[in-house]
Amino acid sequence: MPQIRTNVFFFLLFLLHIPYYLFALPVLPEPDPSAQPFLPTPTPPATISAFPEQSDLATCPLDLPNELFHGINNACNVKSKSGELSRNQCCPVLGAWLYSAYASTALSRAGRMSASTPYDLPVLPEDSESCVDNLEKALKGRGIELRKPNETCDVVFCYCNIRLHPFNCPEAFTVSKQGKLVGDKSVKMLEKDCLSHNKDHLSLSGCSKCLHRLYQLKEENGMNRTRKTDRRSKMHSRDCELMGLTWLLSKNRTAYIHTVSAVLRALMISSTDGSDPQSCSLASDGMPLAVDSAELDNKSSATKHSYMLSTCMIYVSAIVIYTMFMFL
Image (tube, rainbow, N blue to C red; front, side, top):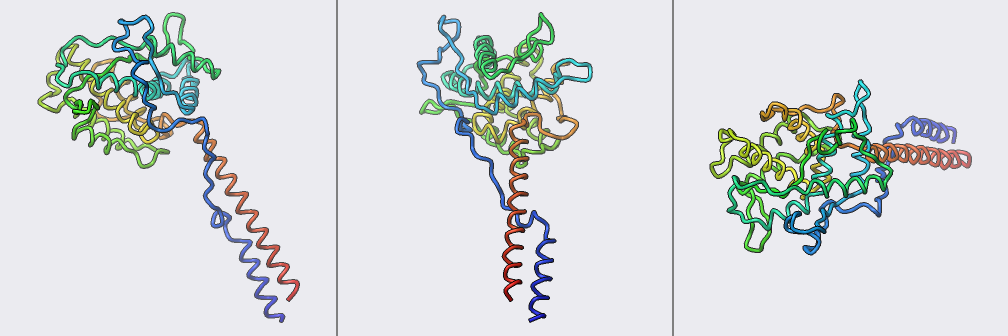
């Protein structure tokens, strides 16, 4: 009998020293019932005008999930050391979320365009004004305001130079017999190379790989980057890049939002001299630009719940074993 009690005592002592995380069960955050699915909800054709200038009632339907508000609020409320709005932090995230919200509208309009449309036709009218108005109204409804860097410069157009208009990139995208927009092999490779398997930490090499794959969209069918000698060719090249990024966001917003924001950052930084960046640069802490507080809060909450659960399991086990020990 003393030997049994001794064995039970040492077993109990061993149990209490087992690291709590060995008992922890994965705890998933409760889904937000108001969150929209990854893929944008198709907009009824009747609500989308072919060209904004053809109708006084032209609107810009946007897909605005809860994550968009968190992401924009966190990125665009960050100020630089000088106390001013941080362009490198705000603009790429704002652009990524705005292109994501605009994806369904942009790609549906692109699908109506002829696949044989030459790239040197005049640029299609922008949706920027109506789209940004809709976005700002939605943000204000959530108590979020895009504060202008000064009285004469707004955030989206002037400060971040974000423009929205129907895309046209026949080098990589065509319209099927069923009238659907489809991507060629280069688009499939883009989907593969831009997919980050670790959304919590986007590597420089992964971002740069996506960036170089993006350039190849406009090089298909004989379209070589050496032709980027005039302004219209450069605009078309950027159109293909933005269409590729918007395509990714329409395929799976959650999977691609961090990569797209990092690639946009590289493109925006280099836009001053007109050259194509050859590599990406991330935030100094290595975190993806579009990470938001909701994700961090969910992780913190899950960790806390795991710790509490494991602690309870240890004490319950201790009580049971102690009771058995007393009755032996």
